[in-house]
Image (cartoon, rainbow, N blue to C red; front, side):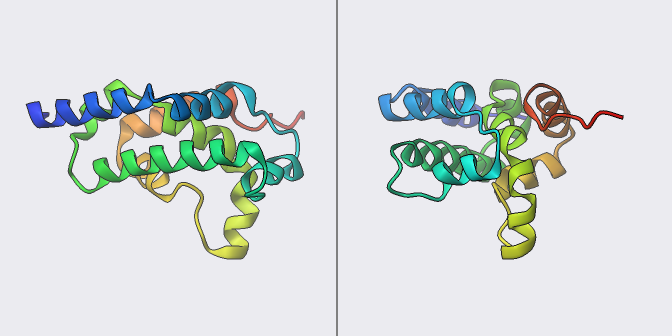
Length: 141
């Protein structure tokens, strides 16, 4: 059961989302960045000199931090998942590009978000919904 303290953390996370740099990063990741190849994705995600790399790192680190709060019990999962899904959207949108990289490096993409999806049915359902909207295109039969 969520507490007032949980609600206060959620409200603080919401306030931080309005910070100018994070707002730009979120817009870029959700609406503007739609890579068509792994090379296009890596031109942003791996090139620390690319202007957009700041948006990539800012957005992913923010949502990974928030997911860690849920996983460590600092925030009620039901309240968190009822109030935001953007981190799961980003995971759904970009994870398919990282499958091979994960196999090679052993470093999972958005590990906290992935663990949250695996642990909480509401997160898994949200992930499935976002995969339909933003995930990789289905192969034609």
